[in-house]
Image 1 (cartoon, rainbow, N blue to C red):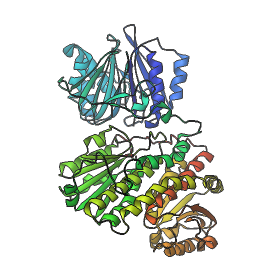
Image 2 (tube, rainbow, N blue to C red):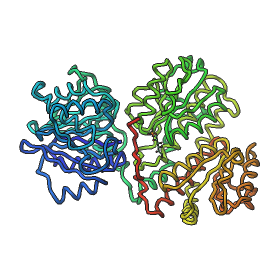
Image 3 (cartoon, rainbow, N blue to C red):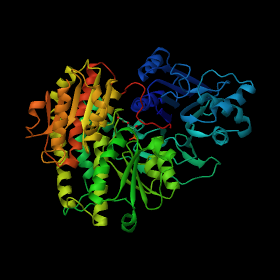
Image 4 (cartoon, rainbow, N blue to C red):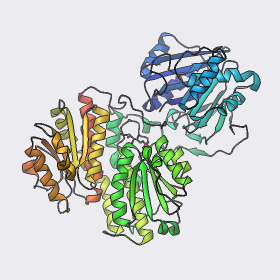
Length: 613
Ligand code: F6R
């Protein structure tokens, strides 16, 4: 959700902040704003719509030069996305400006208190009340950091708050509870942001703030305390990627770049994790063999695309390890009273590591005594920090809102864990680990090969641009691939799209079929026990007028007479096929949205990092 940037230092602060916001725009993009401190006063500019509107506003009405600024891109929760509700929000006396990510749950109570004391509210946001509470607190506290400490103790919910004050140039103060905040340590300048991407062009030295902490940055100091002013230890780390990794590098869209990066992301996620003898080693796993031998259930919890990767992982985990595995939407998990104990391992999958539903689910699991393994793409983010164990996916920064390369690497990371578990428990059921390791090692090249089908897939997208809906069917691991294909199409092309287990068609969804409806069919490899069953499903849908787009491995001629279009997949074992079969579906959704003229990287109503429940 919302992107936050703060800066103090020698550069033109508003420029640094707007550049940072550009890199965070994926987090939310329905309005944007900045505040600067100059000549003992606060100046703000804010605009509804994308960041370009704010940039135009700043060109039209330039800000006074300043070395201290905060900025925000918004994903609206309280109040419509308009100029007034855009952040920053300023206190009535104009001395304090605040930006916020999260939801203040006791907002209504605090608003009524402020109204009763005579304050006039200008916006519908929960954020504005913090500006007024801070102004009211200043006489008692005497400085901005102490005032923020006092105010934070009154707030419930999730928040990252960043504030500046007119009388104290060269100081930005921030607080964090349940929403992300990182500090960037520069040379004679310091940064605050929701994500390191905002300041990576200036410094790679980062500090992740913990829960209920306050940070004060000046050009030469970073002071971190808890909400009561007690100093806390912080861990500083170096970001391993550079600014160019978060650029488009010649591609028209981040999504196209990220689709193309998938072979590398798969290879990078495997590097150093499989020995020459096929043994898996997972540094940092931090779960003893004894513990892993004792677990009797695995629950995977995640949202959206990460959830779909978990659905695929379940097949491999149960097949290779014989440990029962459930997959649960994180937003549902803790509300259904799940049965968990010390012998349950919960796997929380998250690209961002900040998804609130997943974070709350894993916290709940830990409270119940279960251990949590995070599978995550964002170093130092909250989910891995609060987990017992972590396997990082090495996809590099994923900027397009629709997840692509993270999905493939989530599958790879889950498979590595499944192989490791099989190794530790001595269960390598089905296939020996060495053979799986060999096949997994070949997948990067196969993902590269399937990218060669992209031109043909784009042509298919153009053919169906006027279809009112698109269906996707698959069996076994092809079923979650169908769900993922439908999810991509919904979020990017705003089309009705559904994924079904092919065997379920005749139990209801087949009624949706009529002349010309495009149906994608994911066919397992030749020889798989489900292969012939899905060939029958293709015939069933074709007989009812559907246009069939069949994804089948090279050399599978059995589908030729039933397919209107064929997309060829490189040969690979059935369990690994999702790594190639999902790629044409990503390309299809991307092209469909492009042809329809939609913003592929920033689809409407969405945000990359969903930090509210
Ligand atoms: C879809 C998409 C979302 C995310 C979901 C979880 O393309 O990107 O469905 O997968 O919001 O996000 P993370 O993985 O950051 O927890």
